[in-house]
Image 1 (spheres, rainbow, N blue to C red):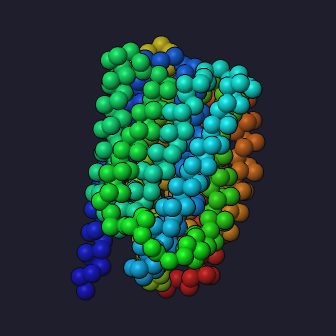
Image 2 (tube, helix red, strand yellow):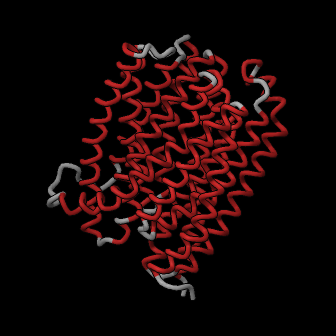
Image 3 (tube, rainbow, N blue to C red):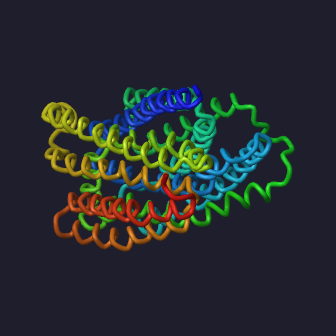
Length: 426
């Protein structure tokens, strides 16, 4: 009789800690952006946001291949198979991450020597690859603790990362070496430091015998082969705007739209925080055939997240004159309309992410792939067209339109298919 209230309290407590965790991560990303605004040129920041988007692309791949199976498949398995699958996935992700390092080096050299991309130089190559590899390591540690609903441990891992990065950035400012390569190196080393601390506390025996990897990796691939194309398409929809704006208008405009976005990220990352908690719990509800609970919690939490975004935007709007006077300066003046547009995007994104998590937990991967491809077929031409017509703010309007479209599709067709596969509503 008391198990359900206890589970609800644990879920709520985990969500609160996860929001705090995402707030800490958002704060360091915000500080990095503000440091670029204050201590570096616009071109350098414009290059950084494009490289950061590529890092998010690598994380998208990891989410499809590693983190998604950890949070979706492993909760349905017995304890011994859980341990084996966790270790096999860690070994596999290490190989893939090393492969991405090689690809990153080749790509950066082409950009420097072949294309002569402004703002990209040889001293950025190693720090960027380090940042990519380190990100995969820390995200694995975070997923492990999210699986166990140990959100306090997730917070400790990220606190170690944030502490390291902030110390390194402060040192860079003090000695006059703050810049693109310094930031990327700080992020990469901070990721590795936090991952090492987090994984050291786990009982996983990474070099022990855990049977053949074929079964675990096969199950993960069965999910990943459907989620990967959708995840990559989703990344194009959500991050390609940086490259579109940079290509159509220039890197300085990419810096403007990214500066406005980063001011809204504390609210936006609350959505990410809840998604990390909601996905494994949604998988459990589906396993228990508790679909009404899944839908009810999704609708309520979506409304609460929208309220968080609106409240944050009101506070930001009130404080914006001070931000513009003391932090943004003349280089980034007039970003408030972009901030308001980003708040609309994140409000819509809250419901779309929750709906997507529900279908992911239901293992409707093919359906999600269809939806994300549909969103991209509409989204990319819309981003290009509205950017050419209205400037950088047009890209934000296009992204918001696609989020609303996907919400409508998932709530209508996706909900129907969810009940078709897992049972009719009671």
